[in-house]
Every structure is written in structure tokens, then in C-alpha cells.
Length: 190
Image: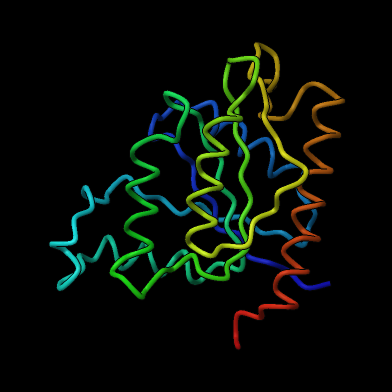
């Protein structure tokens, strides 16, 4: 079977981000056909169209990393019923200047964790709206809003709860099928 290179974004810049911990544990459950590589964005300045005529190296690197991925997975917290400002800033860099949207036709998925009972449901819906505008085909189901509780991830960095691990494994299997289906219809080399 074909292997897909999945670039992933961690929505939080915090070094001890629970979403970073979730991503690390999540990838241990992934089908072998999915290879994950983080696309960092902490070095991006705040976007302004003033940069469009002379895009800085950090912006070019970020756009290239998105474009070099077969798919994108965003693992994000929810801040004030939306996405973190740094993540929105990164998305703005990837979609600009006008006519050079790096997300176009790249399949994407969204997942996140929060201590709150509804996980990151509202923030994910906001992010889906943004990705839809950017013409990124999205895996809309299953959705994954994970409540982060003590003991969710063990000392080995694995999902400790068997039913949560089973759900996350099936989420990644569905993501694999989704990516393969999208790239059959919208091949990246076309």
C-alpha cells in the first residue's frame, strides 16, 4: 500500500501543550501507511500583506512544508471558542499572497483535546470553516473532541484508556482511507 506523508500542526505554542502530548500518543496508533512530520510555525511573524511583495524565508519554508505534504492534520486546543491566534496566523501565511494558497486540494483532518467536557468542538468548527474557504478537502467524520483528564496518557506517552485508544485508532484508519480517496480524485502530481 502507498505511504502518505502527513504534515501536522500543533495549534498551541506551549512547550507542555496537552495537544502536543495527544499528537505524540496518537501517532503511535496510526496505520503504518501514514508517516507524520511536524510543520512548526513559531518563527512566523504576524502576517501582513506588506510582506506579500517580499515573502520572508520563514513564510516560504512554511508554505513549502504544507505543499510538500500529502495531507495535513491539525491538532489544536480551543481558545475562547476559536483557534489559537498563532495557528490562525500560520494559516494566513500559508494562504497568501492571493493566488498562492498552499492548502488548496490538500486533504486535512482536525482533532484536539481540552480539559473541558466538550473538548475542542467549537474551535474545530471554526477551523473547519477556515479550511473550507481554503479549498482543503476535510475529513468531516468521525469527529474527535477529546477531553483531557489525568491518566489519559501514561508515562510511556501512550493513550492509557483502552476505549479511547480504540476510538483514536479508528479515527486514524478513517483518516488514512479519506486521504487515499481524496488523492485518487485530486492527485497531487496533476
